[in-house]
Length: 216
Image (cartoon, rainbow, N blue to C red; front, side):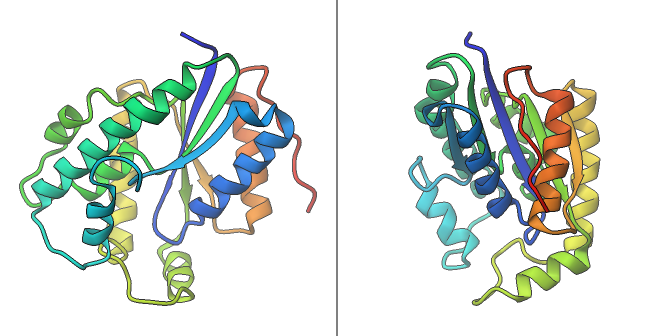
């Protein structure tokens, strides 16, 4: 196996993870040869069932929780086979930053008769991240950021306090299984959050992956 690093950013809607993941990717491309760094996201539009899932999240179609869990698992399996694994194993010192991954599925799809164990089984072939960062914001911050967006809220942009508590419960479950998950305070500015992530990487990333802090 190549010397690579697979990093996932997770968080409530409004946590800033999409912007942070892209800004972090830019910092990594400035520090490493750009071809060794890649950014991706889930649900992945280019992977199986991607557009179907987007229609569900956008409330354009309605399906059962079990069907949605199966769709996400299919999307992730295809994403792994065609992008994640080939990139990470395609050369040394490669870094892949992913905006959401199976932690999100465990939080959002474990409902209406779909158990955590079933979801773990559905996603058992997915590559385990080397590091997952949970960008933690208060429900108030999350609501305020979501409200600044235009358009109707998506399917899972409600009940944020309950969702945040569920994240922490499942983070503890995955940590007990040996996964490396760190919580980052994401209530501050983009630069403050990036610098907190850089601190975490200093403790958990390989020696060849070192970033300088961003000037405030």
